[in-house]
Amino acid sequence: MTCLEDIGRVEISGGIEASLGGRYASALFQLARDDRQLQSVEDSLARVADTLANSPEFRQLTANPVLSRKDASAGIAAVAGSLGLDPLTTRFLGVLAANRRLNQLPQVIRAFRTLAANHRGETTAEVTSAHPLDDGQVAALKQQLRQRVGRDVALHTHVDPSILGGLVVRIGSQMIDSSIRTRLNSLAHAMKG
Image (cartoon, rainbow, N blue to C red; front, side):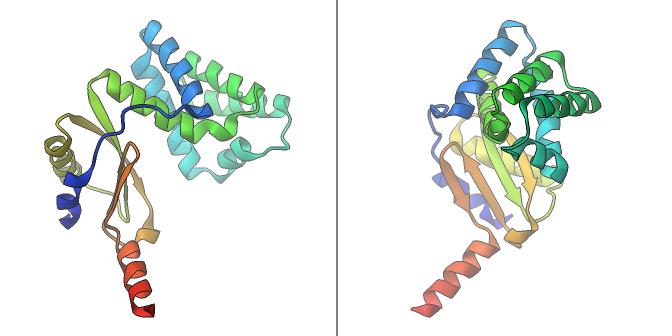
């Protein structure tokens, strides 16, 4: 993990953007906090994020602009039941479906994770690697990030074989891209002159 030395250049972004997804995430966060359900909602959203990443059918359900509100709500209810989501998250997804905002789901999940991590005194980092990171690599990366940013760091890892190797780390609006794909693209661009 030679890209860990690049982590020192990261600065922490101050807050959630005033985006539509951020506003929905803020509303869900406030409800979950007030009902003392932050952990259960965060766990449910993690299952939803995994399903988004691994199910083309679910991605299609959330991205289809011609799907009726009734059909979207029915599809979401079925998915929520099969994933065993908590009632608050299930109702929230129903609201997104009824308001035709399921396409905002990735942004909502990302913003909610940031809000929950800030609530715990942590910073969130989205980490993309070409191969799954083992527990030792995750622990080393967390430690390195903790030293650089001065706070505990909650990692959300993703696998994207197209980066070929290395890591892409995003903390707030800052990104460190030490992927082999980016390095090869830079080299190709430099050779074109």
